[in-house]
Length: 383
Ligand SMILES: [Zn+2]
Image (tube, rainbow, N blue to C red; front, side, top):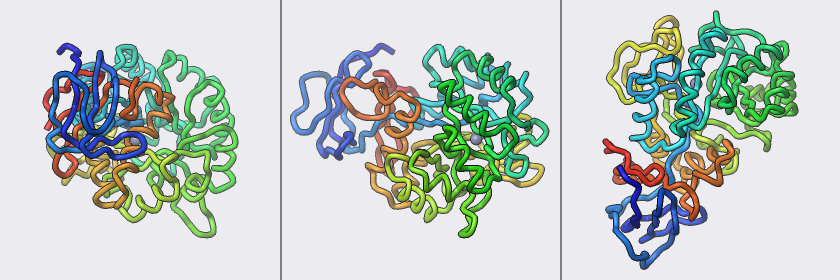
């Protein structure tokens, strides 16, 4: 596939500030060269077929897909995970790893590093092991530990600069100190899988945590006399909240409530997808644990706990608009613009704007991807 120059026309273009009916996106050398409405510039045309043209999705929390997983050293499984999500419109993603012994994480990060260097992944997200046993969800309780400076340093070193985000529970002994260490190292500190009360969560934010890992899931529930992680993180202007918008992990009314409160500057949709995504029901693994998948819902075999999702970003987009009743502009920002900014990539991806990478998704009926463009190249096997 060679990178060509062409103009996508015949659709509604989700530009940063407005939806442009009869809009166009001009692509040159893998970048967006111009965006407009009305008469398109000269050049080869690609017909959007009356669809909605949106920026490629950015997923900051994903474990795998297409039977592949990021929690392994099998490079085929990593490549399959990436291509599965790419066919659903994800053009930028982090690879998330569940809690495992430090040596296993080191090996897994070694395998993922090649993909980061190649530009196939935007980095690594460590979702553990410094999380609460009381709220560990589908993480192996035996792999959890309290954070200490040496272990945090060892993990970041093993990631060779590719660790972009780490989820932890600030109430653990050493938790707040670890948040500070991450922030000072330029790694996004995310609060999640936590049983903390307001004071403990607030201390984490004061120390530099800026993300709520899948708000509502894997955390102490909301209570009107003890806001816990949900109330505290949602209410804090410094915190971006991840939402798993599969309509299983969070009720559509709560999605709407959270997205409306956090607003367009702080809402990020994530998949938290595991290996069964895009595959048949059956038995799978998440890290070392066995998972059963039925009707698109993944649960641990041992205790029935939700074990990641089988969500893709296009479905998350559709669910936010159709079920949670947010508008298309809000969905674009939550699936592309805001997560790109969170990763510090806002000058590269996340919007249909001249100068950015030509990462474009054409959505057809029911917001299903018809074509996906990544860095100016059409992704095979879409639709
Ligand atoms: Zn996860």
